[in-house]
Amino acid sequence: MDAPEHPSDSTERLPDSGARPRRFSIADGIFSESAIYGILLVSALIVVTGRGQDGWQVLLRVAATVVIFWVAHVFANLLSSIGRSDDFRPTTALAHGISETSGMLLAALVPLVIILLGALRVVSNNSAEWAALWVNVTLLAVLAYIGLTRRGSRMWVRWAAAAGAALLGILIVVLKASVH
Image (cartoon, rainbow, N blue to C red):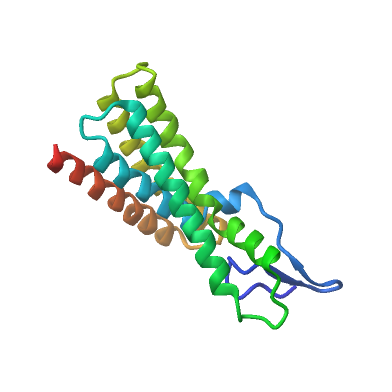
């Protein structure tokens, strides 16, 4: 079986049946560049919107912004697929764009649930924001490590990527600390 040129290619060449679209899997969405981007986006939005705001305002602003960014990424993916093939099908390109960028939405779920706990006053808004940021640092490291494990990368590459991803999250935490 021939491997796709890039892990995000939408088709794989199968030996007996020609090209078939890859099926979407939640794991593909979670361990993707769009998930890493989504976590960083949510973290930055928490820093910007969480400055003394009501928990519901933070939750709604972060969620709405993530959805808008996701729609923009789907649209950009659709536009970039025009002209790549003589057999362009908008619905196929749209499905591919949704699949490729789904990680952004999936990655936002955990920190948004934590922010929701603040909005519901289970914990303070400030505690929820800090918890969401530190959970995101952990998620960045874990997603990088597992994502590269799934690709068969060497151990040192996995650890280096996990450290690099976590460092990006820590930089956002430092930004929050400096803003407040």
